[in-house]
Amino acid sequence: MKSVPNKTNKLPLVPTLRPRKPGRSLAMQPNERAAIFKLKRELEKALNLVDYRVFGSKARYEESPESDIDVMIEVENYTPEVETLIDELVFEINLDHDCLISAVIFGSKELHEGPLRESPIYRSINREGIRI
Image 1 (cartoon, rainbow, N blue to C red):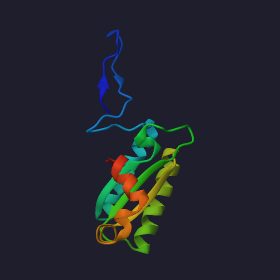
Image 2 (cartoon, rainbow, N blue to C red):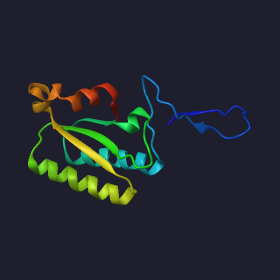
Image 3 (cartoon, rainbow, N blue to C red):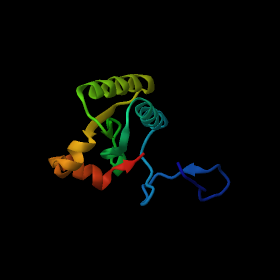
């Protein structure tokens, strides 16, 4: 998270709160930020992770106290076993970090060679998603 000086320059630096392009930041609490980075590390250890993005209200800075963290996960080979592994990781991380991550999972082949790339959700992710 980038920090900027406050107006009085007498207090410590405060985090920026607005998204920026390129390199936009995320509207997240510290526990949520820790959770998405932990999930990414665990996915990289267990799978061939191709792409990982946060999208939705957290990426658009339209979050409310009830907002979940929408995460797009693209893996090279999407199988029922991979889905189970991801679901279990998300469940554990949600409990450990007191947050709610909602994962949308895509396989590379289905996404890039099939009709999924034209789906409304994937188009939205491409438009607003922030790659982590």
